[in-house]
Length: 137
Image 1 (spheres, rainbow, N blue to C red):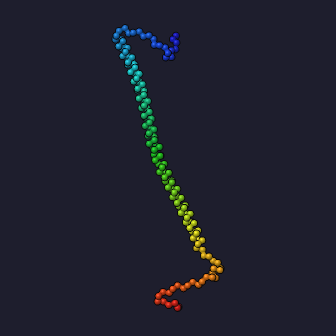
Image 2 (image 1 turned 60 degrees about the vertical axis):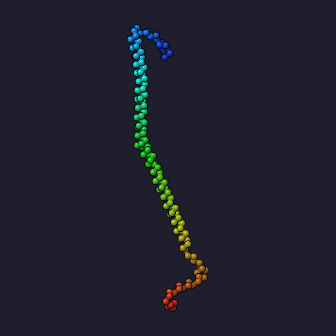
Image 3 (image 1 turned 45 degrees about the vertical axis):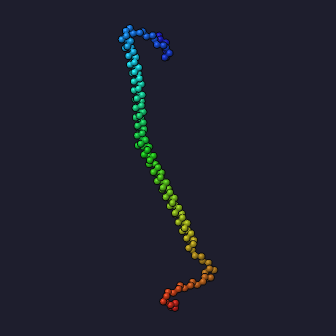
């Protein structure tokens, strides 16, 4: 039974090939295995990058279709709401100002009726007559 090496064991001694053709074949085989491993690593990396690029395209598509449209609409809606609020406030101010003015006018237009005031009132002067007419009459 072999003990578990877990990567700490030394390579077993390999016998040298018997002919030079086998030595060249072994060198070519090792180079091919190394190149195949590098190719597999590169291919896996390329697949991972392609998958990430696809996910990124999907995210960009979702952003364009949903978020960007929503974010461009929201400022317009907020601006409209602000304008409506300002308009309502202006209408309330005008209404309040006009109701105050109406109340002031009502107070000013009421005649003062005191009995002392009426008894001391002087007779109103007659309006001047027009030329060519006499006052008698």
